[in-house]
Length: 247
Image 1 (cartoon, rainbow, N blue to C red):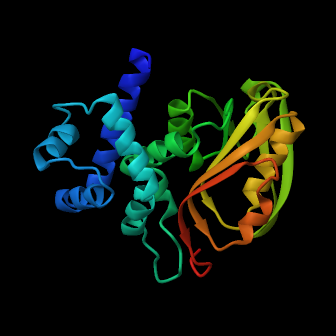
Image 2: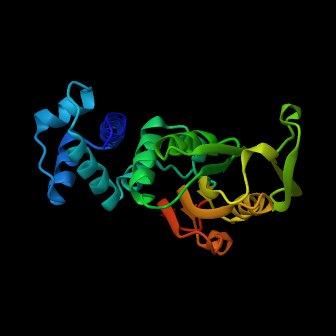
Image 3: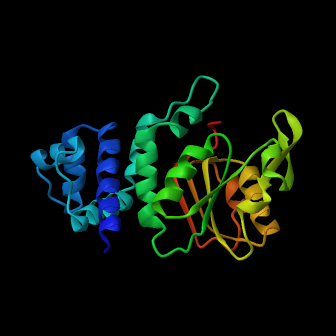
């Protein structure tokens, strides 16, 4: 392993532990790791989280794989999730919480090992922080589809889809230079519910001759979105699945 890759792995593990510690006590974190056979002392955990010591690359990989196995991202999301009296989920707050985003990046690193990803494709606005972090850990490019034209990009590919609330036709625009024919794409979104945005992003990739290799999301509500997952996607990673009653 190259030195840069080793350090990146160590920092990813530390950030994931720090993120989990935001939602769990130190004792809970140690118990979670211990149940899965990874023994870390309270002193070592504190040193990792405080940045005084970095775990070895081997230990870092063990930590990351363990956190993926127990879905630490989902455990944190369960504690961060708020559904108000109208049944609305606090998606915007979750999508911009760095502790959760670091856990998500760590999960993506492990779950998408072996999946070829050239570009991460997401939709503005809430998907951008997650997409950027995931693109970074996967050493992939980042493509952002927007709902309005930006004259600075010159030319675009465009997809139109129906959005029922309120009833209207929505558009997604992707700069023509963002994707190339034959590239493998990971679609990243903060929330999957109806699957309309997922389907639109997959269509943008198809228009450029790219192939959707996988899908990654923080939250998935209900199961309607599953019909929008492209057949080419070899993996779908969901942080937390929520019953369809939440909005």
